[in-house]
Image 1 (cartoon, helix red, strand yellow):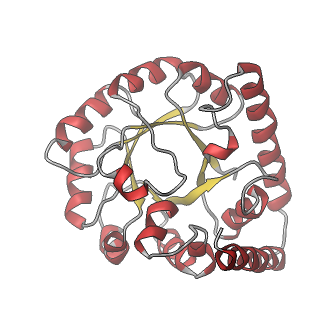
Image 2 (image 1 turned 120 degrees about the vertical axis):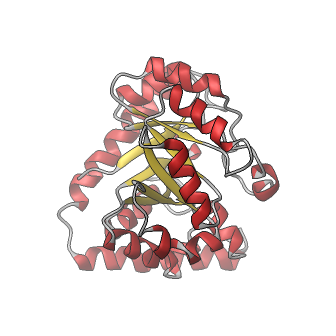
Length: 273
């Protein structure tokens, strides 16, 4: 089965291009509480989306799902999530949760009106994941490599792929039958670790979803609509074609790729890039 591709966007025209070219979910990102402090030194996406963006994107989409990331649980979470759901989110993502209680509140606030997705990106969350997976009403889990690698004081987010941590967590999620995935992917031949290598890791771990990273198409830098359209058309098509190739590969192929990823990660960490 093809991996569900997600792309962060709050501009209707960009959302339309992504949807037209096969992106499964458009991702409106409302998380602002504490993110700049956590990731200020990391080259990660820090969005400035708002509640109105949910309505605007929802009215734009015809086939793709609308995913919305809320803030972590805080005193106004119930009202925030009510707004997110009432404006048409199909999936709501909870970031930076640290306890079973956080998850229960989030699930109950959504109350079956949208899919419940947990972004597992803290060490405390990982410690209680077994208990969380016994709860009803948890539809999906995405492993957030950016914050989780910072919490483990690692130098590079893909160290989590090479030290066994993603394997361990994905194993637990798959054992419970959860729709799950991790991190993001760049264009197939781009990225510090190429998108092709990382997509192969997704298939090795039976991942169901991935975010198309900012480096896939950085619309903060690329303003030419025709160029953006070409990037999505070619980039998504390349991913889908490579998925067809991966679907018929042997276990040995995936293990060989994993060893190459380990070597490349070690090189990057060792060089201090």
